[in-house]
Length: 229
Image (cartoon, rainbow, N blue to C red):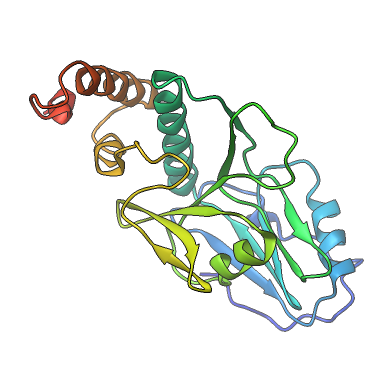
């Protein structure tokens, strides 16, 4: 893990470290810039440019610059692909927005999800219905607190091979068993296709077949039997 050095408030002439632009590490790497203003956050975003990484977050004076590992990127992309397979199989309209930069200067909050989606036909909304976060390496700022201030209804967190949906209830995000934005999606079934396949396309094909089987015979055999041995 990269150390967290003290950093001066003004960041206009600070370059993003080269190793944070790479994507070969096994672990995610993070650098924290303390005592940073909102303008500093905007400058770091501008220095990063149109890249999808490193991903940058801001929380009340702290900037987090996170370079995701290749493992992190593979998992987040696979989850997204399976969500899209499900939506296509169930005729659900969706629009993916990837690592959409969500920010609100007044609330001193900004972050970029691993993946995010708007469901339905109105893709002009200011916030996604669903954000997906992969926790591959521990540490970092409290993303759920940021998502709340930014007004995102539901967040899925993948950690230790399990996907947990979080929704806002009783003044905090709470883990729930079933997604509220995709209430008929069986997350336990989806999880079975996150490992054991040589390629993403193979996992997508197997998941699509399992969904067809589940629709044709909901009381029949375990649809995960499509998974290779």
